[in-house]
Length: 397
Ligand code: PLP
Image 1 (tube, helix red, strand yellow):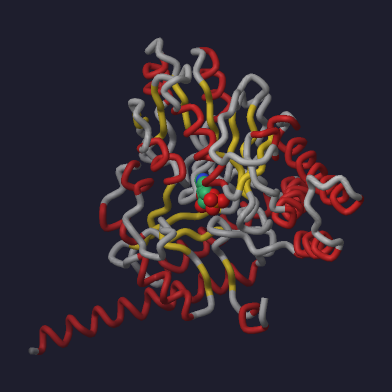
Image 2 (cartoon, rainbow, N blue to C red):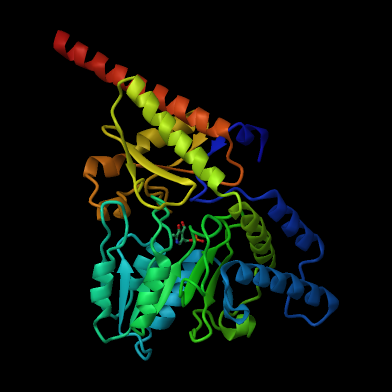
């Protein structure tokens, strides 16, 4: 990070976590050691292979996955595509798809390309999936592929994954869990959570973008999306992204350590929310609306809106103050569209348009929070004053 960038307060970890120093060091090491082709039989190739297998081992161990069941991909999105598209093949046993309404586009858009019927399961006003609706959907004897995320990227809402996994397996269906946001922020265990397929991504935990993984249980068969060489046990052709994978492995090891003290992040997040509320009350400003605050949510995530203020305005105003946050839904095209997540939760339109997401991570400090609270409050005070002035001018005219 340049000096200028280091003066900033980065609070957008759910979009991408900054690269961890340990990841950078591991990637540089791999780069400097030659970065040979891991399929080559010479010593350099064997060294590259050993680095990949080390990363594979760390990731599998962290989520209790089967070492033969990890397929490295280019992203979490590719992992979701691989899982869904394989099982969408008409010849497969799966006859329909169930998704929650708050899934990431990597799931929703891919499911939408299927010829199979897709059923969307609703969520309640806190963003939690309707388990009764899931249970009744599972009564249909046609086996389903059920895609439900462990934790939501916008609100941080956590789903009861172990319970869902148990229900899905009991009905002979297949459970795909998008664990991209949950990874490193809460425990994920393929065994105890009965997960058949788990999608992960490196850049959400301080690895480099361009590296993801799909983990599959031993009874799951995968049909490749990409054909060519025999890499990844013939399930994903192409010379492996050695640096990205090494970085992923190093990031997992850091995340495993962080998980031991993850509650500290929740303390920081809660302090921020409490301070914001206190300031808004003290200055008699518009109330804050927090989303998914009343249920179990990721310890690093806070999603909220201030009535009457658009998220684009807030994000830009904070950016000018050196603070990076996201609008409720940060779109990959850079254009902010209304959040399908908040809409599914039944949030009123004006609040959907105003939602912003603050997400913390491994390098977050109390000063980041203090700055955010001070700048946001000052901005809302200024907006109020501008509004009052404009009303006075109108009245005088
Ligand atoms: N799933 C969730 C829940 C996400 O938040 C994201 C990224 O924001 C993805 C999938 C896609 O991951 P990637 O950016 O690695 O393609």
